[in-house]
Amino acid sequence: MNYLGEEGYVENAQRIMTIKQMIIDGLAESADLRTAKTDLSLLIIDSPTLDITKVVGGMSQRGWSLLGNAQPPAIHLAIDPISDEQVERMLNDFHEVVEEVKSGEADQQGSLAYSGGQGEGYMPKWVRQVFDMLPKKLSK
Image 1: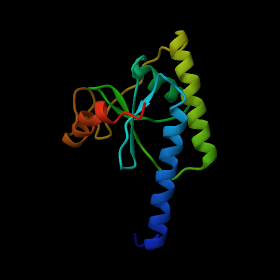
Image 2 (image 1 turned 90 degrees about the horizontal axis):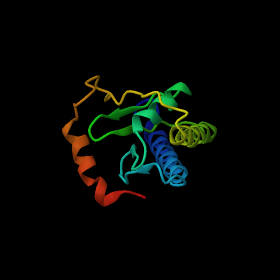
Image 3 (image 1 turned 180 degrees about the vertical axis):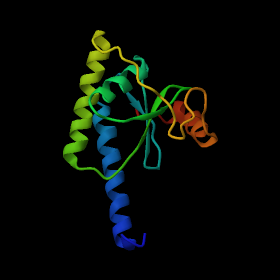
Image 4 (image 1 turned 120 degrees about the vertical axis):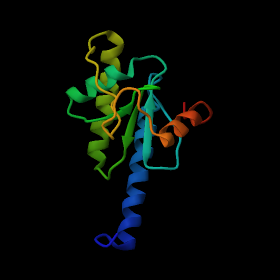
């Protein structure tokens, strides 16, 4: 806050929420990925049709480091202020990976270890609360 100032902080927050919406809109094109509607900069992505760990594995092979939750399996994406070009690259990579997983071409599983380093089976209370809201608030 001291470095950015109030105006800079607000601009940064607006940019982050714009990026989040760009990702939600871009992933909405795929019936294989769903995003949860939240008011936060956190974006949760799951799949009704695919092994999400294989999506994480494919994204990892493309240089993306994604965090997640083991139960229920989902990607936990904290949004940072990145360029529009980086958002487009991420979306293109997601779409390519989904097609590769569907075709069986991509089968490397990635880790859904939570950012706290806890990994399999661990879920903070606040993440559980977000997941409890998912059936009511899925954007797709």
